[in-house]
Image (cartoon, rainbow, N blue to C red; front, side, top):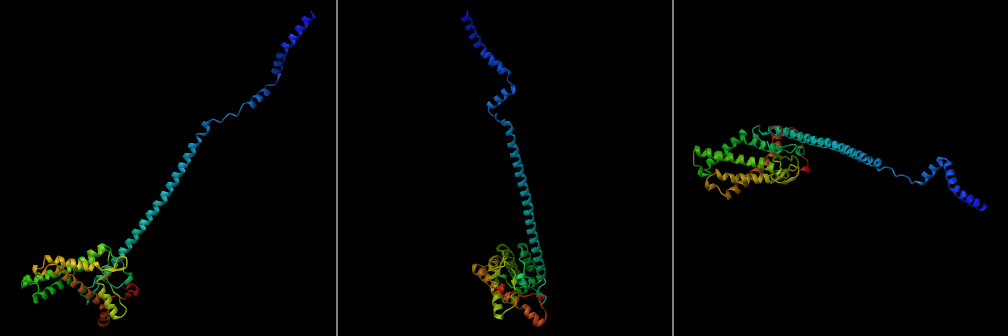
Length: 313
């Protein structure tokens, strides 16, 4: 009996031990259990959806700031380009108006108040380059001057008396043909050599009076301008406009002169003759103000200062 009691006692102790531990655990505070559970669980990662929306916002901010900066730069560049273009247009317009004023003064220059000297400038380095249109207009103004027509009739009478160009016959008909041919020579040579070719080759068709130095030096300078001229850039260069214009005018003359007075020989000869005449005309343009001042006591230059030695050839 005692053994049975001992057996039941041991069995009861064994069975009571798990239940006692469970009850003890059940009696522990819940906070301790939650603390242990939280301590055991790893840190939960942050949701990715909370981080992803920030990137588009940053990108949009960057793109908006970039677009605003680019638009600001474009806005700054546009006024700068517009101001540079407007300033360039104003400068060109100012040069054109100044050149036009100088042309108007030149159109009043005449020898003894009769013979035009429209292609002579007394302003030296202060002379403003002409535009292509101004060059052609100035050449045309000289070509239609009444004195130019008068010179053609004088040359026609000279050839009539010498019986030059017999193919034109004799009498009134021959005289008017010779005068017409002389005017055509002057018109073609002037328009080509002082208008069209200077516009194409960017050369100044005007004579730049030196106005100082020894007589021989000035005479050589004046004669050399038939072969040398100033370009629109202000530098001296071969006068292809004058020489080329004279030769081309001589070629055109083959179409209205008699056949016995035409051909390449006549073309080159007339071109060189007109060039030599231009050399003599340059010398006259150089010294006419001196002659006018001493003989007529008039200054055609109206007090203009001669160009400096650095601007001569």
